[in-house]
Image (cartoon, rainbow, N blue to C red):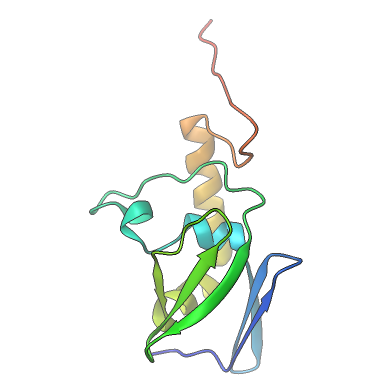
Length: 123
């Protein structure tokens, strides 16, 4: 189990900062929201693409026993328990996971912006 040595929530910049062995990782609330381990996001073996989460923030966080954090997002989502191991994987694989997410959005013709709809025209 990789437990962070420090956890800082930066509400104004919408970042969760995690420190592991002197290395600091900043994860945006949007990144965490679209990678929530909840059934709402992960589905039952088939992840559900999260769209329109640009600008989502973190209202707070709470420990869940000694094994996880419960993150409370300002869009009302608070059902995912982020285990220490899962948070560590998100931190060290951030760039790869974010690139994959953006590619999935593009392939689906969807947007990060909740005020934008993407329409593909077939010519």
